[in-house]
Amino acid sequence: MKINFKIKSGALQFTVFISVLIALLMAGLILYAYTFIYMKEQSKGAIENIQFSDIGIQALLEQKEFDTDTVQLDFIKKENQTIKVHLSQWGIFEKGVSTSQFRKKKFTKIAIIGSLLNTDESPTLFLQETYNALIVVGSTTVRGITYLPEQGVNSGYIAGQSYYGSQLVYGTIKKSSKELPQPKKSLLETIEYDLKQYRPLDQDDYISLEKNSRIINSFKKKTKSIYFKNPIILENKIITGNIIIKSETSIVVKNTALLKDVILIAPIIEIEDETTGVFQAIASKKITVGKACKLSYPSALVLFQDNKNNPDEISTNSMDNKIFIDSKSVIKGNVCYFQTKTTSDFQTQILLEKEANIKGQVYCNGNFDIRGTVSGSVITKQFLANQSGSVFVNHIYNGTIENQNIPNIYGGIVLEQEQPKTILKWLY
Image 1 (tube, rainbow, N blue to C red):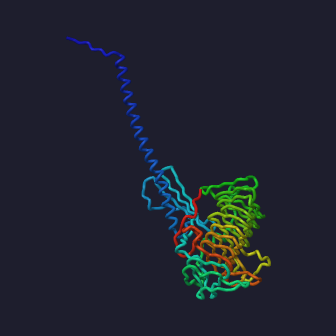
Image 2: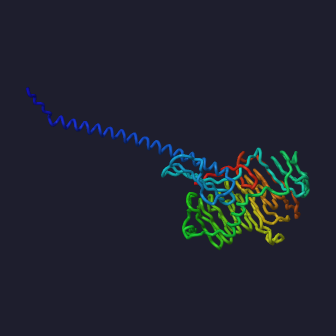
């Protein structure tokens, strides 16, 4: 017996529809699973990018010498993942760049790096051995670990005033050496190059000062420059980032200018009263800071004098050849005087006025006249006190050097002797 079985067309269409729907659902699930795995891998890669860039920065903190090229770290053994680092000089500090890459995604960290100073372990004062004792007079205070000449410390008299403290030094006294701790050679070479030779190389490296009231350049981009042979007056400007401002004559910073993380280079740099900002000022003749200025951390005032061929030359202008910081100004960072001659003189190279404050490190291989307060560390060849028409060698008159009103960990210039480094500031 023959049985005729027919399937209606509607049922066949329904079967095909169900099959297609199942196929789409399976394809969707497979695509979802693939996308989930891919996104998870990308997210993990992004997180590892951040972590690996931290590893790169840590490697730079341990790196002793500069490499002219960006180098790839070889201790990361992972497919599609790389870390490249670069260490260079940025003014008196070091600049570390760490870039990690996973496939096409990159993450970059940039930091200003300096030597690590610990208030519990680092010297508050290092006074070079010149066979002259330190003499404290008036309301002078020296507090912390103190390195002094073999003659030690005594009290003295200036203008009828004696020493009023209960102790000559409030802290441990150790013997200093005949030479100051030396700055890293690359630091001095960079400063000398910046003062004598630095020029923008290409037209694209220039920034117009006149056309812009706000100038910003990321440290992830190439360094830009504002350069003039004539004097530069900075006023009514906001200038931020990876920018070098150089004049072959002088730079004047008005208090209407706001400078952040830039470097100023000129023979003469003048900072007007009540100026605020955070920047490095590098000069070869003089730096003057007006009253009630506030320079944030990590700022720097640097005077470099190549005077080995003219060791006896003296300017008739009493303000020349020195860093002068007027009353009520606060400098958070570093104040440094470097010179190439080795003979001593009786000229003041750093003058900190009454009620002025440096929070950080002072390095002076000349003479330091301190009438205000340094909270942090002082490394100096000699002190001078210019009082009552006389010059008193290795005297501190009403000055304060202490290590209490400053963070326990802070940064200074990198020295030749091996020492740990620290991050002074993250850049952008």
